[in-house]
Length: 282
Image 1 (cartoon, rainbow, N blue to C red):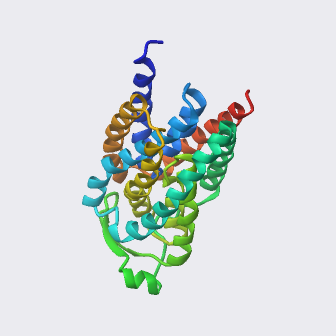
Image 2: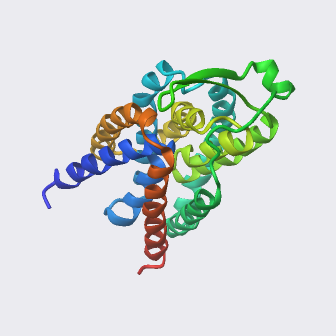
């Protein structure tokens, strides 16, 4: 294959990831890293470095439209993203250290983590509009609430959240995993925001997509500083993911996230199994 072959394939692959990732609220990294690590001839460190940058790119591309629609909430995103980004730095250093010992450790751990994510997504039942009558003290202190218009019904939905402390503890784990594997954090953000804190599913999906721009940027610079980011992989991937995410953010208000979620679960399971097989040299 000529030198431009793999970058071209990466562009079209990440374009599709951008469209479906934003609508499912999981960003691009969690789909890109297992797929690229399993089916592309790149070292796992370069894949993880690129994965963080494309998750960042998809978030930046989708954020303006989601904020304009009042689906993404700054008040909800900022505390959760700041907690996750702090621990993403620790995770990035830990992931590069493990990879230096043996890349198979990261490849195998990635496969196990991805399959674990699949089961979390499979058995976690999203609540479209959880009933949260009033927030706790921390929620009221930070004034985490909002209103958005549900385009499928034309009704205004008022929302707030609770269990804020439990949610912040969950983002500690999310940040560590995001840094270690370069996955982004959207796969867990939606579950924590919706199931633990009680945000409506569309607010959780949109806020998750926006918050990735904060969480992933911290870990991404660690990988760049260590030389684990190759422009020939990162540039076409970021262009593809941002174009796709821009389309996905416009489709999100009109598409049920559950439809996209089921498609993502199937792709992730296949990629997780392939990653485990690669770790064992199969």
